[in-house]
Amino acid sequence: MAVGQSTNGNSGNKKPCHCYKVADLTSPILESSLTSNLLERYDLGGQLGWGQFGVIRECTDVFTGEKLACKSIAKDRLVTEDDLRSVKLEIEIMSRLSGHPHVVELKAVYEEERYVHLVMELCAGGELFHLLEKRGRFSEPQARILFQHLMEVVMFCHDKGIVHRDLKPENILLATDSPSSPIKLADFGLATFIEPGKNLYGTVGSPFYIAPEVLGGGYNQAADIWSAGVILYILLSGMPPFWAKTKSGIFDAVRAAKLWFPSNHWGHISPSAKDLITGMLRKDPAQRLTAAQVLGEARWAFLGSLNQLWSVHAIEHVLLQIMLG
Image (cartoon, rainbow, N blue to C red; front, side, top):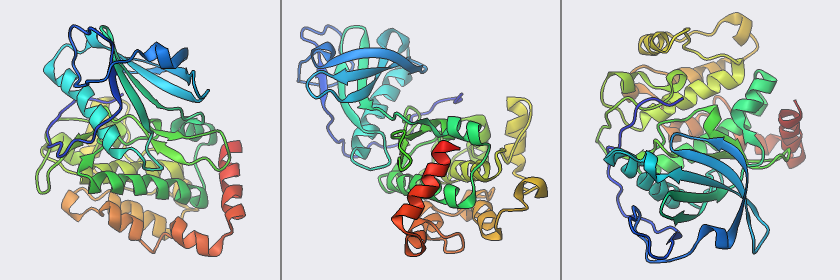
């Protein structure tokens, strides 16, 4: 579960989304001049999950038959100005990131008296977390492909002045149940904008993945790199680098940031992979690798280098191993 919330940052130029409201809406919270009703376009199906403010259900476009997901946010749960700002910010950020191959696409937003509905791309393959739970860990070739895609979208966010602030396997989805499914970054409920050279404040994130500077004061995009480094550590070993039985104990371990690679879990992992993780989990964010530097690390070859060595069929074979366990 994520902890805390903060909405510092500058949104910059807004990018419009397909936002609609029901006719004669008495208390709108979103800006929209278009009127339409969700149920005129979509049939709602079974529940897929739930969040802080509402439920996520499968839905079907009645005109095209496309299967999608609908996140229905209960407006009566938006009790503070920060709650309202968070929903608006999530919609704006998803709209700005729309079109990236590794971001869950926001199709449309519908507001009615009691709910705000976010209609999104359906990722039928489920969470990376569940696949990790099933497998225990991934081999280096498998982890490289997944991590390459993750870092591409993290760099895309950072280039647009966006910090995700809750990177974790639960928020990384598999677009389909196909062996060659791409990953999709999801859940931008804690994401925010940041101005160059500025810091954000407030304890935001999930315990195992939160960066030490988030717990101790101001932070910036480097906090996402820390979280991604934790994800890579877990992908390769099946265990978190900073662990304790309680949330406060986890936070103490994160603050100490004593990184080690026990031989029983890391004896088979290459030194270059360990070097990359070490560069991402430096306690000082100023010394931490950036997303561009992570992608440029030649010591732990990413997909771009692998394409020179492997055929497309070989890559698909690795993905098939991931999906089938």
